[in-house]
Length: 108
Length: 97
Image (cartoon, rainbow over all chains, first blue to last red; front, side, top):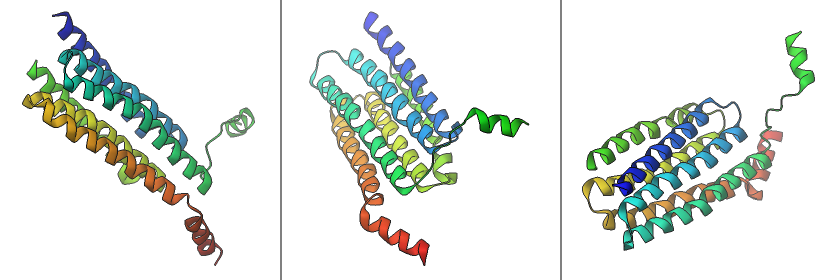
């Protein structure tokens, strides 16, 4: 019973994190901030959901393979996001920087 | 418990459809690649949940591993291709002419 409760809790928490990452991809203004939202919250959400599935499964061969998937995603998702951001910086996409001076200029 | 997996898979499907907006209207090419990468990452979880709905996780887990490798490799290769020197030089020539 405790096993199923923790599994449901982890899956709901992970889906909430994935939802936040999805909203961040749509709402944020810049490519670099979008890449931040996509890489971090997706990695944590997938960790929580697959961790909940591992708790539901118990000690079997399938749970070991699920653990391999978690380790692979932890390695691969930040590497892909980093490579994309590096390519964008080399191509010359400028990040949006908000200074206090420009802000007061817009306000006045 | 299978009903819970079914409902969470439905919610996850709706969440996966959200970054398609960024794929369609993204200002630059990199936004589109980033949103495609995010969709591929979330599909991994969806395939795992599908395996638990059908009760055959031992078969679906191998599909998930292969899909994870393919999605990661696709985004990495496109990023390396766009930042390679030949492509950058060709683009500079086109802009200057």
